Image (cartoon, rainbow, N blue to C red; front, side, top):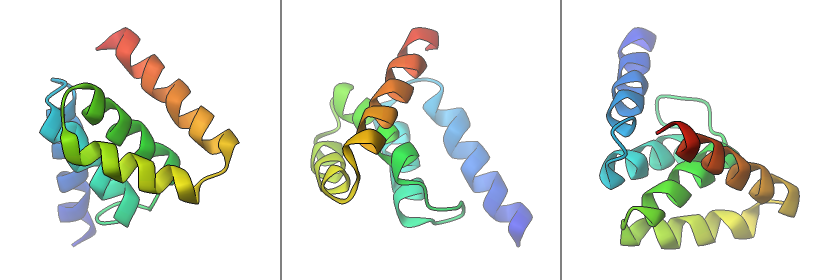
Length: 89
C-alpha cells in the first residue's frame, strides 16, 4: 500500500516537471491534504502558487486559503521555493 501511494506522488511530481497547471495543482492538493504524502503547507502553497501563475484559477483560492493558515515566514519560504523551481523549469 505505501508503495502505491509513493507511486502516486512520484507520478504527480513527474507530471509537474512539465509545468502543466493541472499537474502543479494536483501536487498542491496532495501536500495540502496529506493524501499519499505527509501534509506540508509550505510545499502545498508552492505548488498552488506555481499552478496559479500558469493559469489554474482554482489554485488562486487554495493558495489564498492556505496563506491564511500559515505564518508570514512560511508563506515567504513557499514563495522562495516557487521562485527556485521556476529557475530550473
